[in-house]
Each structure stands twice: as structure tokens, then as C-alpha cells.
Image (cartoon, rainbow, N blue to C red):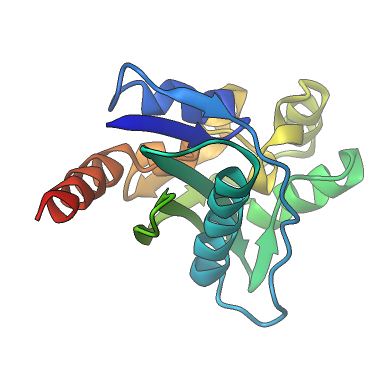
Length: 192
């Protein structure tokens, strides 16, 4: 099977390599808009589908399985995407301080002939109480700016995290163990 990872994320590339050694990376242009009031897990799935369908429309994906994903941080009823600037990163990190939030990663497996499998994985993450100096030091590292919720668990943001419940790799942006199983199920169904 030919695999296409529809993602600009270097973390997703690194994680997908743990499942499949040979794959292509294509970065589609997609308008990522979610309807107001949508549940956060559903939003993650919808955004993954939007990216995957954009790849199918913009590139030759015949004979391939397109894998796309989107990660959302959910805290206090709010969806936290990537911070716009330092003040937005500060606001997000202050909101997460001392609390538990949920990281949702939606994944879409799509083919040009219409096969579609979409799922979402959820992981609860608890932060320590964060001192002002730590928040600003982390913001100055520039690590928060390309990450949902303004932190990366795998980088310098690891010092913020008190504990997790669920898949660590899901917090990085790709639920590796579940994706492996979903890909195998999709292949079995395609052969049946």
C-alpha cells in the first residue's frame, strides 16, 4: 500500500515513521473552519477530514491511503489552537496552569476510491501550577508557537506537565498505537 501523510508537522512525520518506513508527505492547502458549537472531539475529526480531502483534490493520490490529522487542546470549554502571539500563548498557559485539560487528535484515513475511516483519540493532561517566570521563559523559547494549546510535551514544555492519562503520542499529534490498528483494519476491509 502506498501511504501519503497529509501534514506539514515534523512531529507527525517522525511518529508515522514508527508505523510505516516508506511514505510520501504532501501538504495540502485547506480552509480549516469548524461550525460554532461543535464538540471538540468532532472538530478534531472534521479538521482531519478537511485536510485529507484537500490532499485528494490537490494531488494524485490514486492507489494510496491518505492519512491526515488535527490536534485540538480543550480547556475550560474552549478550543485552544496555536497561539497568535506571546500574549495569546501566555493566556493559554495561564489557563492550563494547575488544571487538567484534554488533547483530542482526529485522524482521517481516506482513499481516492471513497474509502474513509475517521476516529479521534483523547488524552487528559494535567499541568503543575506554573510560576510567571517559567511561563515567560517557555514563551521566550519560541516552542509554544506552532503547537495547539501553546505547548509541546516532547520539547521544553515537558517541565509543565504533572501527568497524563492516555496516549502520550496523541499529545504530540498522532495516536500511534491506535493509528496502527486502524490502518490494519482498513486494509483488511479493503481486501474483503
